[in-house]
Length: 265
Length: 299
Image 1 (cartoon, rainbow over the protein chains, first blue to last red):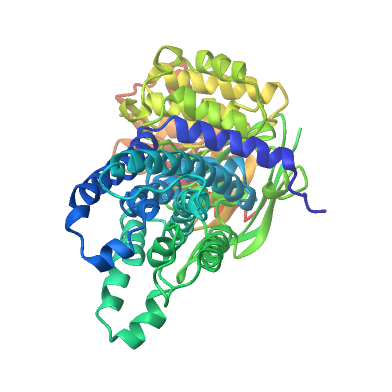
Image 2: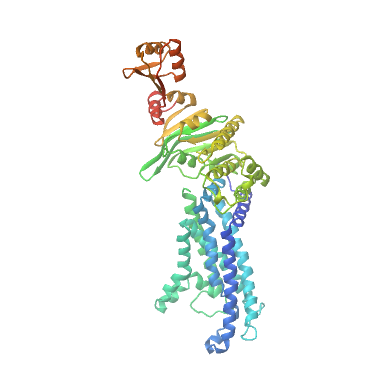
């Protein structure tokens, strides 16, 4: 007779995860870093672009996407949200809390489900809020010096919403990698490799190879999904790209869950 | 209340067997001491009982089912497995609250427990600054959070001061009197023999003894070294009263099966001088050896 996971169990575990998240300084700090980098650096980039716009080349002027430009801070915020996702699990291993958590939820999979919903949910809500904030701040900074976009323009809301969604998906990829590796430093290094180092390495390859490999990298997918206008012909379209990122996050979580369910803690 | 059943439990780390075909039952209403030298496999066994480690063979059941099949397990089984199973940056209250939330336990139970274990005034401090003793008290609070019928404590007196040790002994006795199942590990016979009604003794992962406490403490009664000028006369008196006497020197005897006080009384009654009366405890290792010979592997 095996016990069936009930929704009550997952709800209780979600409440527990929420208390855990709220009661640690590290989660507040990483969220603060996510907000500061995405909104702050986004504003800085928008300001810089607006003041340089008059000296842009005609090609740069032609491909100017004010929406994408205002959301550029997310390319830095992704690192903060990756740390947030990694620490959600590796901090438990480092401190030994994982043993208390598993003793309370010995089936383990509901525990991870609750963790993914709570941490992914926080990343999504915060991600959406700061993406919309970045957009409006960016447009007001562009205004008068460079062409601006309007929230009602085609693709704009999609681009903003996908920026928040991207941040949540990075959080889940980080959680999955953290689960599989169990160590903070290793998991963060892997996320940095995935988001920043690998694309740099691929960018050094001949363009024929580059185009077929780079389009699979999360950040390149994000760059193409968070613009209102599509510029990069070799890359995936926004919906295909985002679907691919959902698959990445699901695969990372599946590998993490699989290892976590089998290992001693 | 539920019993803990351990059946042919085996855990291998690399080529070494940490727990080797171990079977025993822990009955409700008693304190059962889980005894063995450091590294004997006690902690590993306890971790397998609560589903943290996966056995390579055999099983452990609580109330007839594996721990992982118990819904809201902390309401049935409370465990203190190690003091360090909490984040140093979290307060004691938040640690207890998240565990309470995970089991659907109301938060006023958290406040109750903070009072009960005596750390209410430190409840909102980060546990990273706790002493080992306070950490143990918080660990006991975690174990008792769900008012469980089964309580499992791994070396709970570690780091506790004299008051703390007395407190935990009384607590465990009262839990057993309420009919709960209490399993308490220690590497010190003297420590558990005070509290435990029953002992399960393991060494190198294997069962050495599973018997009432008296049986093991009797085996550990040790010998008494007696220095007496009239050695032979005293030996005769003691032998007549049931002691086993070994002559070991010109004026000394090694007496077993009799306590020092009784030897002194007998010597006084026989008007024989005693110059020295030294109880010599057998080491736990010796007690184990004696047990393996006298009791065999099970009672």
